[in-house]
Amino acid sequence: MPRKKVFYRIAFLLFICLLVIVTRYVYLAASVINAYGAKIICSAFYLQHRSVQKVIEEELYAFPFSLADYTLNEQDSSVTGTIWGLAKRKAIYRKGLGATLVSDSSETQIKAQHFILPVKPSKNTDTIAWPNGNQLPDTLPPGIDPLRLDTILQQALNEYKDGNPVYTNAIVVLYNGQLAAEKYAHGYNKNSLLPGWSVAKSITAALTGILVKKGKLDVNAPAPVAEWKGTGKEKITLKQLLQQTTGLDYEENYRKPSGATSMLFEKGNAAAYAAQLPLAYTPGTVFNYSSGNSNIISRIVRQAMGENYHAFPYESLFYKTGMYSIVLEPDASGTYVGSSFCYATARDYARFGLLYYNNGKWNNEQLLPEDWVEATVQPSVADTLQHYGYQFWLNGFNKNDPSQRWYTDVPADMYFADGFGGQDIYIIPSKKLVVVRLGLHVMDENKLLKDIISAIR
Image (cartoon, rainbow, N blue to C red; front, side, top):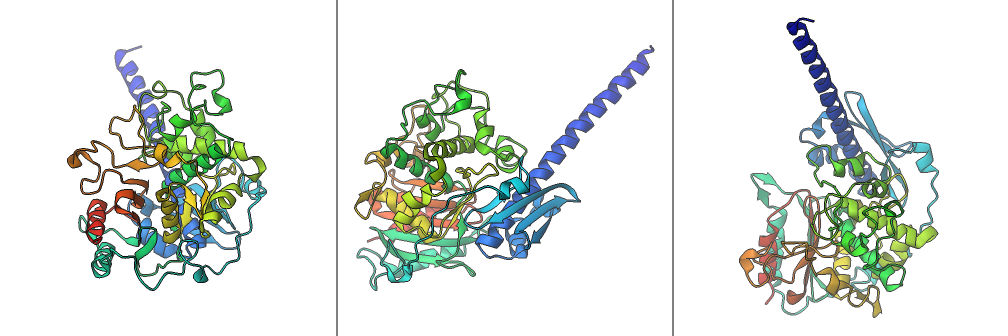
């Protein structure tokens, strides 16, 4: 065969291969975009009572999400997303469970699932004193400069970054356990549910702690993951899952099709997807932030609790601490997406922070092990930056050198639950502070915390 014909055939085959790769990439990207938008709108419409148009304008306006069209179907409580009719994805709403993406299983199978959820206590929380309820005292705790604090929070609501508004929707400040100040953006108030994103990781850690206290789990023992038996992963401990040092080959990247986008927006069983990943490192030797680890923990909690799993977070944690608004959302397999999907009021996120501030105790009941919070703020040896504990971020770096801290103007003992877009619960024991900030985009939170601290006399 002439050399020229061979060259053309090879070139043609390479072109076909490239076309297949590009087409597959585009389809995967479109599927993730449609799934993300459908899930966000479904949760926002049914949990936050926001209009579809408002969500699109504030959260889905930018490329590539602007390519998609979204359809709300109130008859079957669903939202469907598609780009030019391709890669259609659907999210369904179920009362008490929020939104779930239809993935792997059929919609009929998902809707047929049976969940045992507890009845929410019928209490008028406005008549119950903080923190168990929402009734606030007439006076602020001593040590607060109320005018300065009010000014600081108002400025935060109006902050811009790189010429664009950061859309802070809520800020709550607790001082010595008391609600000292709060501010909400237009359209939001103390009863508004807001997404926590990866704040869910810290909640998953708290649920783990409760089971450790009950003797159902041991952080130092190999994690009870059936797929790992007889493999190099069988010695991965629950502690390594909590500290993000499992060594699993996982990429937390949302700018392209990745392990993170596949797990959350393509797979119906997030934990099973994460558990089957191969090892990239020897367990316990490398820190790698991974939503996959968090979802494996969530499934471990489910296995430990059995039939009472879905009620467990509410009965053992949320309702005991007055967190009556919170909703955890499950994936198509029925396991709570412990890495990412939760909604609650800003005050309820503050209550969660207060539980940790009080060393896991609430109303004189020790909900978490007595040493759980202390263990939570200890980084692993593998974490070279010293900035992560049990599903909480730490101020880290060099505690004796403020310039080496994550937030240079905030005390070294600060630790925080952190979610995408700046959903944060900051706990600063040395300043007797718990600060919740919830918004659509990250802001200069080092400055916010520094200013709030300056309002404490």
